[in-house]
Length: 226
Image 1 (cartoon, helix red, strand yellow):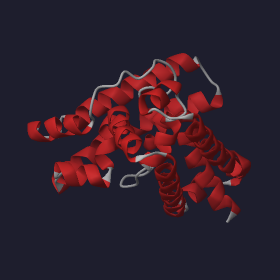
Image 2 (tube, one colour):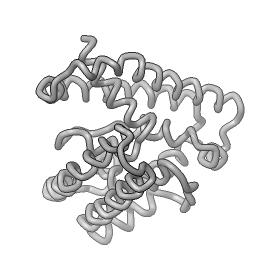
Image 3 (cartoon, one colour):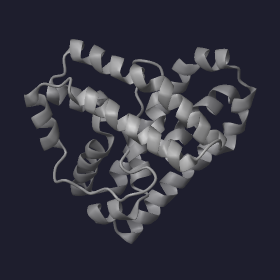
C-alpha cells in the first residue's frame, strides 16, 4: 500500500507544484482531475481577486492546498523504491486514487466558494487548461464531442507526451536551464492545444469559447497559463 500511495502522491504533487506538465505523465484514456489543477490556480493572488475571495476563504484554500501538498510529499520518498515496471503495473490503481482525491478536493472547493465564485472558477479553468478541458465529462457532453473526435484528441495527447515527459524529467532533476525548459514545455503545450482545438467543428469551438466567459489575463510567470 505504501508503494501505491507513493505513486498517487507523486501524481498529486505534479499538479500541486507543476500543474502544466502533469497531464503528459499518464497513459492514454486516463484523466487528471480539473479540481486539483484549479487548486493550484487558486494559489495565485490575481485569480483570487478575480473571484472575490475573502480572507476567511483564502485561509481555507491555503489550508486545502497545503494539506494536498503535504499528503503528497510525506510519502513521495517511497517512489525511488519502485521500478518502471512496478509503476506501470500500478498506474490504474494510482489514477483511481488521484481521481478520488480530485473528487474530495472538488467537494471541499464547493464548500469554500459560493455559486458565483464556483461558476467563474470553472470559466477560468477552461481558459487556462484549453484543450486539456476537452476531457471534462461536462465539456464533452456540452460540445457533443464524438467518439471519432475523442480518438483524434487522444492521438494528439500521445503525440506530445514523450517530449513533455523528457522536459519534465530534466526540470525535476534540476538539469539544464529551468527557465528554458519551462518555455519549451509551454510552447509544446500551446502547439498541442492548438492542434487539439482544430479537431472541433466551428460550432463546437464557438460554444467552447462561450463557456469560458469573459477573457481573463493570467499573470505572467510559472504555471500561467496552464
